[in-house]
Amino acid sequence: MADVILRGRAHRFEPNDDINTDYIISGRYKFKIDDMNELAKHVMEDIAPDFASKVESGDIIVAGRNFGCGSSREQAPRALKAAGVSAVLAKSYARIFYRNSFNIGLPVIVCDTDWIVDGEAMLVDLEKGYVMSETSGRQATFSHLPKTMRVLLNDGGLIPHLRKHGGFSFD
Amino acid sequence: MGKTITEKVLSKHSETDCHAGDIVVASVDFCMAQDGTSKLMIEELAALGFATPKPLRGAAIVLDHSSPSPSAEVSRIHSVIKDFSAKHAIELHDVGEGVCHQVVPESGRVLPGDLVVGADSHTCTYGALNACSTGMGSADVAAAVHTGKLWFRVPEALKVDISGGFKDRVSAKDLILRLVGDVRADGATYKSLEFSGETLPSINMDGRMTISNMVVEMGAKFGPFPFDAVTSSWYASIGLNPAAGVTADDDASYVRTIDVDASDLVPKVARPDRVDNVCDVSECAGTEIDQVFLGTCTNGRLSDLAAAADILKGRRVKKGLRLIVAPASRSVLMRSIEAGIVSQLLAAGAVFVSPGCGPCVGTHAGVPSDGERVLSTANRNFSGRMGNNNDVEIYLASPETAAASALEGRITDPREV
Ligand code: SF4
Image 1: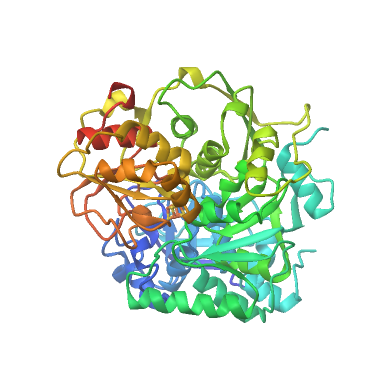
Image 2 (image 1 turned 90 degrees about the vertical axis):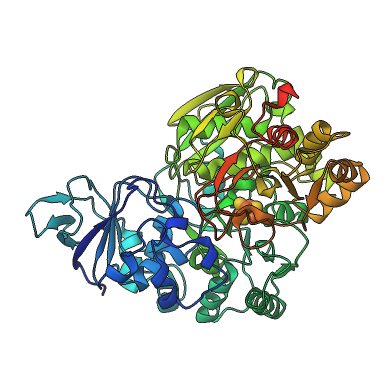
């Protein structure tokens, strides 16, 4: 069973909308590095060069609209996860990134994020469906994850899901 | 209640009566991956104990993104891919055959009404062939290759109704750029864009592929055209004769209809560094450029090279400007040679690189220098897109605008040369 309560510091970026997969992990590393921990050292480097050295295990990325647009590279959510990111909060996601994230076991949540301040201590409750700033006490709710996504997170991602059940099993 | 093309394709493949919003597990007809995404997919397939592809028409890997290999590291990845595909009956398209989204259609493995997934975001291109086709990550594609199935949320559909005729030197790229500019980068997220209207018979398959290719730049999942005479004659040209495809019901429900009058269109440009930062060419005309790139899965086909050659023949590109051309496939290159297009472009000063992605994603040939400005016929202009360089500005436009701009060394309206 995956963790349902996630805790970490909020990281915001500039720009906050349309953070594309090239910003998350540049295409120039795609052929160069295949060790995810190495890739994690370059995560977000084009828009926040110090992010990879600052991020701590459990930290949470906070973004605006259309997070993860651009290429289908699965390295994007994987590099975030390898860097220690425990969840992403954004107003919306590009669809390939959204699927990829659940497929590799990274929860990505759709909710209002304007109120979240960079550096705040955040808590995300996947089960009850809310996000809270432990710094300011403010919170926001999000709608329940579709069952397909909950099953995938619980199983640790798509490949472990297929291994466990020998096929798709969402019922 | 009537159904969209999307609902019909997903109903048939899931053996259910599904509508927008439902989540279904559906059988997949064909899967593809390219050299940048295959390595992860191979690892995931190995973890699944994979033997041979289950989709009806199998699976293919195309070596196109970094091809021929520029380094020993990439060569090692290519070797792993080649060994794996030979062992597991995955069709391999070796270096030089072309960009995946041209090679796959030419191979005849995608048929009208098919459901296709590929580990490349522009897999939506096969919408032009009346398929529901979309890009996914390696884990999804591995799952589909291994099981022959995948889960889908049935997307709501937007209808794009195209009327009127295109003016001279205005083309499919201008139409799709205009659409991206209006709908914006996330305006069609999770949706299917279905094309229709009186103008479709005059948009050839190359133009349709240009349009379906870029639906993902609005966040869309699928971009199907209906099956019609253009579809069947294109299939005849590759030696196939599919009986029929899928058309939407008259009472299908769409979340929105977007009307585009092609006769209103002017040449369009997407300015750096967002695809939806679209303007009329007149608004950025005169901007000096260092490199023009003609190619990619968006605009590297025969009609695109012909449109550029029509403007460049008998003339020379501006001194100091690089015009790089990457034909979308070997077949495109051969047909361009036969038609005299290649010699016209070479005589005008073009540099040809091998069929494939070329400079599009900055992994090998044609990487611009720091601070340069590029006008490209590709589909993305994000900062850093064309390689390990700084402050490169990428403008996106049609082959016609690219050719005119190459002549002048600055962004130029193709109707003025
Ligand atoms: S040509 Fe460019 S956009 Fe198309 S598949 Fe290749 S890298 Fe991707």
